[in-house]
Structure formats: structure tokens, C-alpha cells
Length: 604
Image (cartoon, rainbow, N blue to C red):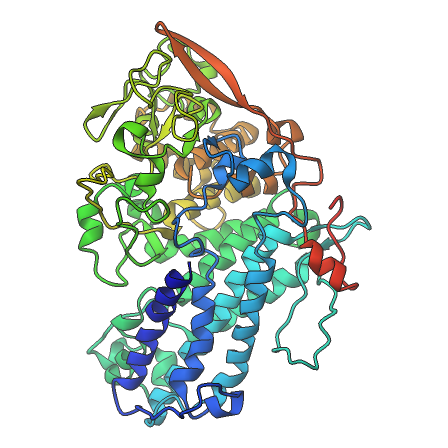
């Protein structure tokens, strides 16, 4: 892990240094490498290292050794065949304030300090000899810092905000100044609303300082007016905001963070104390989508639900360039075909393909996929429980390996009579426990055979446009009903129809048409589409909680499919043991113990 962190540091900071040094700003570092803040004013390459910490600690990029956190195994969507999996143990009853796999408090708040230090330092640093370039660098770096601080706030609220026993909805202690050894560290938590207000203020500053997107230009007139006002031309603009800066925090990404936070705040678990309405959340989502064009639905990526499949396109993807589906992403990597941690295929391929079969999708999730005409299986006369995969939504075969599926050219037999370790419960620690294996996110051209391994590059989307289309649909339905558009020109119904048509659902979509005027049923459908489209990307755990679903739903037994002698039997695989206070995560026990001003969320 330490080596990965070093690589991450170099990946983030090296381009920053290169952009600074590439002109006439080289410097000779002092012999002593321990610097105080005043020394950094004349050492921009060192000062920018503070900002580098914000990217190293990016909550979307943590677990770089595993790429995905697989929190679905703590939900009704999946289980793990690893008995030591921390999410499995959490879901089975071990979730405590001193044992919290979802904890982001210490990590993000420690890095928050670096952001605050940088914000205070940036205006005094001599970023370049040229005064125009120096001003542009200052604005860019400040904008990035404010945008990253907003991102931190969103993830801290998601993981740690909650209602206290005295009826307050609290977030985190808001710190806008760096702390010193003389600071008072015993600070109370601010209200959730105050935290949302702070996030929005930081986003506004990020928008003020940052371009919508980065990129070279040779046209002086193409330089945004706010930079021309300080004397920038195409050359100076490109020097600071050119192609080399792509994929860093931008105004577009900052707006997306604001939209995510608005959706969280408007949700049932938070809306009574957030001051954020569904209408506001819908408009924030629409603002992000309109970055695609005046008619966002026309820009819905036709391959957006299978962005991970075309590894050749990923391999040739230029640095900082995003496919149409992806708003923000990781760097390419994870192509070691035999690495236990770095290769998602090694983790999740069935045993016959030299994988560990770690994430086992549930029958609960399989049942969420409708029939090919879009009708839920519970309402379809064509669904046959003894031929359950026939005539189903194409996304089922795209995302999940079931009995008889082909993967990497090989037929996978999960039945009790299966001839190898792909069979259900055949081999502890590698075989499926549910009768299903994961297909989504995996590149089937990877060969995990250690004697003849072949890897392929991967990317991890940190933000996909499908997330924002579905977020808009959810909020718009609550604000204006299924077919209401507000001032945005498209409705929840329009979004869901487009996403289901992209998936291959029958164009007539009789079920969608039958509920298009029913807000409650549309809500159920939107939530189900979100479950399907975003499965295994880290959303389900948080969605169930912000929706404040009934506790029986949080504790719904995870089911599987046992097939023997061609007979299909749904079985219980794993129980869930969540308590009624576990809609909100805890403040770490040690923090509450050490700082008396911190109030713990109720129940913890």
C-alpha cells in the first residue's frame, strides 16, 4: 500500500511541478527538506504538494489496490465468499463506532488540514515569474482546493452525518482555517444545513476560479472572459489550464459534487433538517446534465451502461480524455492479471477462470431485472421460475453470470452437480455462495492463468453521467411528478424511457406507459433502475439509507439460487442484522471519547 501511495503522489504532483517548471520557474531546493509555511512562499513546487494531498486522499480514489470497495456485499445485492470480508462482518452485526469499515472521518479530516493550509498559503506564493501566469496559477490552484474541500464535505456527510438523541441533524465541525498546535481541537459538530451551506460556498468559489473544462487553445477569443480580464491570452491560458491539467477538479466537476450533495440533502433521511428541496436537487442535477448540451437526453451515451467492456478504447484513451459517459475518472491501471488486489478479474472471475469469485450477486438483485418488455417479474405472466433467465432484461446477462452463461468463451455451471469449483458452495473461499458470479466491470479478455497471464488496462469512473440522469429522474419525480419538467425541458419519465431503451428494453415499454402518471410507482421504478444501472459501483449501501427504507428492507435476507437436477430453488444465503439507528454512520468512538464537544449520532 505504501508503494501505491508513493505512485499516487508522483502521479498527482509530477504534472503540477512540470507545468510550473516548464517555463522559467525552476528553483534550487534547500538542503533541508523540512519546510515551514513561510519558506514555501518562494517554493511553488513544494507548496503545491499540499494540494497534492487533496488528490491523494480523494475519497473516490481510495482503495487503489482494489479499485472497487464492493460495499454491495453489505446490502441485499450481494454477498462475499471471503469470511474475513469487513463489509460482510459489518452486515452480520459487528458494525460499531469503534469498528466501522465505512469510516472516512480520520482520513479526510486529516487531509482537510492540508487543503486549509494550501488555501491560506496560495495567495502569497510566487507561482511564476510572469505576473499573468502567476495570477492564473493562483486562481486555478485555489479553485481546485475549494472544489476538493466540497468533495470531502459530501463524503463526510454521507458517512457520518446523522440525528442526535436530542433531535438535531448534525454534520461535521466546519474548519475553514488550518489548525496549529495551539488550536482548540475540541469543536462541536455544525448542523447538517450549515455543512451543506459551506459545501455550496466552496463550490461557488471553485466555479469562480476554475474553467468549465481544461484544454489547449490557440485562439485568444476562446479564453474565458474572467481570465482575459486579468490579461490572459491563449498562450498563458494554455500554460495554466491546458491539456496537461485535464481530469483535475474543474467547475463542471464542482457542480456535480453540489448536485450529489443536494440529492443527499433532499432525501427522506435528511430533508427535515437540510433545508434542501427536491426541486433544488432536480435543478442541480439538470445543471450538470446541461453541460452535455441543450438537449441532454440526446447525448445519453448509447454504450454508457457497458463503458468497461471496450478495453481497446480504454487502452488508447488519451491522458485526461473522457468517453461520453464519464464526467470524471481515475488514471488507467489495474492491469496485473494475477494480482490478488489490483486485478478485479483475479478477484471475481469464477474459479475455472483462475479467479476467486469474491462478489456473489444475489437472487434479490437478479429478481430486480425485469422481463425484456420491461415488466417486473412479479407482474409478468411470462416469467417461469423454472426457466428464470429466459426473455429477461438484457442487462441481466450483461452484468451477472448465471448457470449456463458463457464467460471468456467457457460455459459456467453453478449447479450442485457442476463438474468444477464453479458449482455453488463447492469450494470455500472461491466458489459462489448464491449461484451467481459477477460480470459487470470485468474485462473478459484478461487471462488470470498464472502460467500464461494477460492483463488489460482499466479505468474507474468517479462520476458517470448515468448517475446524474437517474438523480435527476428521482428528484424531478418527487418535485413535479413523473412527467413534470420544471424549467428543464425533460421529465423523470423521459429519462427512464431513454435509459431503458438504451438497455434493450422493448421500445413499447408497456409497464412504463402504465405507470407514467403514478408518482409512487414511478418512484419504485426509478429506484429499481438506479439499482440495476449502478450496481456494484458503490451506491446501493448509501441509497438504501438516504431513502430511509423500512428496516425490514435493510435486513432482507440475501437469497441465492440452488439448481439441482434442473430444479431451481431459491434459498436464503445470509442474514442481515442492522439496527434502527444504522441509517446513519457513527462518529469514530475515539474521537467522541477524546473530544467532549463532539456529539455522537443517536444509537451509537
